[in-house]
Image (tube, rainbow, N blue to C red):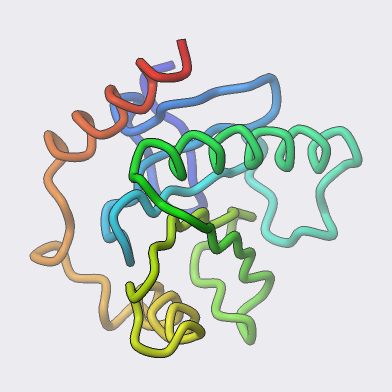
Length: 150
């Protein structure tokens, strides 16, 4: 596994920390909060409705495993788990993906502001390389998460 496809993006294996039969999880190049990761089906499918039942089951099983991991690893007390399904829902990458965001008390002044941040995070005009984490930062985080899954 040298690379994986995530919509229009090519993801290096170094950013992936979990791969199942039908899904994979990767660190985020622009996390909204520390530990914000993504879980995706291996098959590049644009909408949730287009997933096969076995892909849905694997995606949600992988999401549950990832959620437990990041909540512990980032010392969170809660999680926001979100799918933006379609352009009007804020989806910009045409590949189903689940956002998993570890949450802590007071991380946002207004709790639901996280959804505003998710929308801002995904906008094309906000997606500039100077705001991205380095490949080394992403690889280090993925390696830490990968170790905890072993």
